[in-house]
Amino acid sequence: GAVVSQHPSRVICKSGTSVKIECRSLDFQATTMFWYRQFPKQSLMLMATSNEGSKATYEQGVEKDKFLINHASLTLSTLTVTSAHPEDSSFYICSATRQGAKDTQYFGPGTRLTVL
Amino acid sequence: AQSVAQPEDQVNVAEGNPLTVKCTYSVSGNPYLFWYVQYPNRGLQFLLKYITGDNLVKGSYGFEAEFNKSQTSFHLKKPSALVSDSALYFCAHMEYGNKLVFGAGTILRVKS
Figure 1 (tube, rainbow over the protein chains, first blue to last red):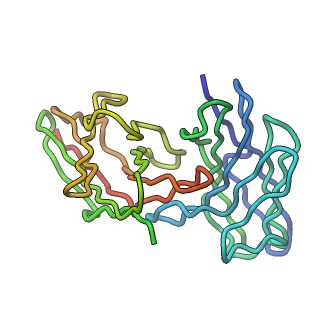
Figure 2: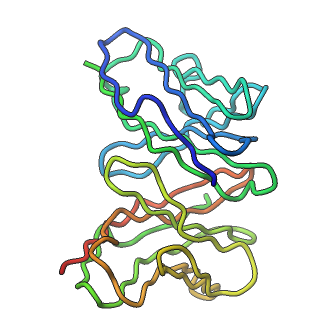
């Protein structure tokens, strides 16, 4: 149990376009989802916290208008990178917590974004 | 600022030998500490956590970690390393709002 999926696993796009990444909890309801960004050979940096039905809370330095997060249901959160630029190329990872066990995050497999 | 530190970028160990991956913390109040493992181009997998209770925490895949308050450490250990344990290991602390703050990560290489 506690499986989190991400789609797509890998995406290449042109500079200036927008890309949507989906994060789904497959076998549980996720009260909270988190979005992280990981640069090569570096640690994960939290971008935002998303609660179902409410606006995401962004970490300092993360542009909310550039990284749009929607958490429309208890099993789905989306991250849209708007007007992507090469510096947005990164590995994006989501995680989710389940009701009654908020201290354990279950991570998705990640999405590799490459902006040309 | 509250943080965790992983002093070693990389740890090398021979298969069958015990392994230790170090983590120290700087946290006010009670620390909530975690270990995660990441295989190449994949998300993180939960290994174990310390919230309260016994200082020795047992986790997945034969790993364990010891919470040491006097040394502010939470080192990850395994009695006998496997080549398949080779991966990137992250120590993390959970802050208010269930947000995880990760250490820089330690690459573990187990050689046969």
